[in-house]
Image (cartoon, rainbow over all chains, first blue to last red; front, side, top):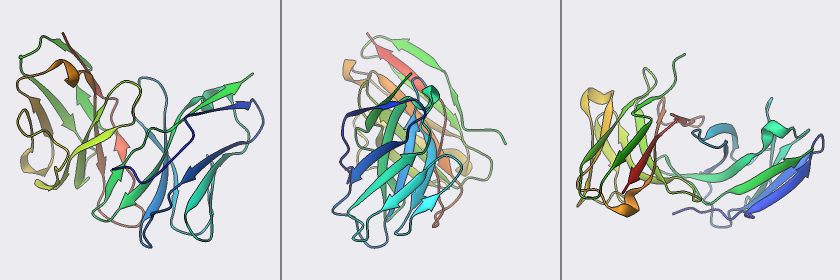
Length: 109
Length: 115
């Protein structure tokens, strides 16, 4: 079962930063937080992951709180192509990835 | 690098019929996953293979669903007999090997409609 909770939907103005929150209060010490996104009719696409340190790559930044009970995915300058469903996932021991219901992000022109 | 290949892309069957989906993971990837995604929901893990052995099939409805991974490469997922509630997109994913930087790479999925 999914160990994460996300808001069902969010809007963001084009060009602004999109901040997507995720709660994972039952996460264990060795479990990673992953973010994927899914554009309609496609398979989910990897964005970023982390354990306890903040991470940044060419797509996004991941901020994990010190107690690791929540995280935020930041898309620094949202574009219309970033409209998608974003999934926050905890990778459990055994390497299973359990998806929740995700956040539907709409980028508004 | 070639991605995860799945076929067919679409399938329409009547209830009580049988159906099979095929997945070819990225070359060299040891772990293979099948997910079921019902419209409006997140993907649900059905089964996980490590090479040709099953790691987790706790959410696979074993009375009608079966899966195999021959020689630790390609995999097939079968439904027999299908029910209306099996209408969904079936996603295959693969990953190189367990580790700190393991990522899932997904195929485009097979959209199944059961009438």
